[in-house]
Amino acid sequence: MRNRQESHVDRSGASWVMSSGGVSDWVAGHSNEIRPGCVTLPTPTCRSFSGCGSLESEAISPESVMLSFGSFKTRDCQGHSRRSFLKASAALPFAAGLAGLDPQVLAAEAPKAKSVMLVWLIGGPSHLDLFDPKPKAPDLYRGPFAAINTRTPGLRVTELLPRLANLSNKFSVVRTNINYNGGHREAGSIGMTGYSATDGGEGGGGGPPGYQPHFGSILARHRARHRLEADSIDLPGFISLARGPIGDGVGPNFGYGGGTWGKGHDPFMFNCAEDGKVSIPELNLLEGLTKNRLASRRDVLAKLDALRRRADQRDFAKWNAVYKRAYNLISSIDANRVFDLSQEKSATRDAYGHTSLGQSALLGRRLVEAGVPFVQVNWSQYVEVLFPNKDYGWDTHSDNFGLMADWHGPLLDRTLSALLEDLDQRGLLETTLVCCMGEFGRTPRINNIGSRDHWPHCYFSVWAGGGIQPGRVIGESDPNGEHPATDPVTPAMVGTTILELAGATSATRAELQVLQDGGHVIDGLV
Image 1: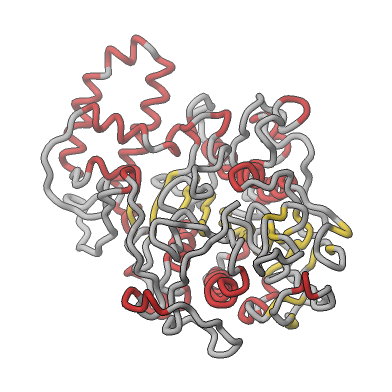
Image 2: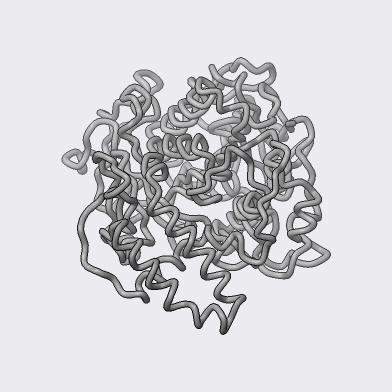
């Protein structure tokens, strides 16, 4: 655990802050770094993220425009070695989803959810300060925020979420999620895979011991075999929006990605900045590789690898799948357009908010609209950075209530409500499953410095669209919000619900040896 002692950044000019509700005073020492509606702090130093380009709007022509490796800008370049290209191709983990599977693409009955958007709140958001207030609890529990009514009978939220309160007829809330670990990396892995690393074989997920595959990796592999008509052929099946693999600031979650299936099933990472510029953090090594040069190299590589193909068919097939998907992505004009947020109306971009989270959510909507099966929008892995070179996400061990009032609550309210409204207005909510949650909650009992610590024993999740029955409240916590009084919901149940609605049924999971034990669809949610 870490206690945050840094001074806060003054956000009094941020355009999204509620005009009423008593935002606490911030230390004014960083006022020269702030402009309304966004954060402009130094970018964390990290070698693997250096040199990231941006999505720049240019005239598109089939002859000259492509998605280059380090950015989305077209330019001339010098040649690159075959080794460099192989290294870049290998960094496209989504492509190996076909490895080891029947290459025939089979028609499948359309599931209720054609796409999934997982909004992941890293660090552990406080359930008592958001979706499960306890106004009658003792002073040491309830916190300073008033509870307000929503459009859903039996559901009250705190005053930090007025927009979502008005939209509650569009979503349902689970108030009794539980996890089995209180550490960020372990709990995050369990939360996104359903099991801990020791839960392999008959006692856990049904697969081999080790960290199991992420729900998104499972769906992407399933859709590689059973493609829907709406699925994109140019974009990865599992995309995660952040500057790198998510974790706790010390390192990535242990089970984030392909797990026992290997790195080839990890999500493909994109970073979306607060100004809407999009970059590929892991592929900046080949900045500026043009489409024509890539096409010529493709011909050369085909000849150079003829001997390798004959020598090792299995390894070559895996590499070739990666290579083909890499080529399709970076040479696709349609893929380029998806990442160009300048094509959106100003009013739409304003509605989401000019923050990294807001613009990432908007990009997520464009990705599911383009047919990406699974998109994870993260807060955080340097998505919303409040302090230079430090990224705590929702890990509010200190100044929980100040952060919730001035930043976390209003930003979540704005972004999630904008996403749900946008999907609904475009007719996408019915076929897009949205789930918003973190790896655990925070202690109902306030700590000795006036904040909240880790609490895996009871927390919330928000569900909408894609087969979810809206306007429902699942489960009830005890009077102080410490434990479920009814209907505990495990991570395996979360994963089972997501995958069932997205078409990866129990038969599919048995074939893939994932999520076979301990999970069922959440009662009352579907």
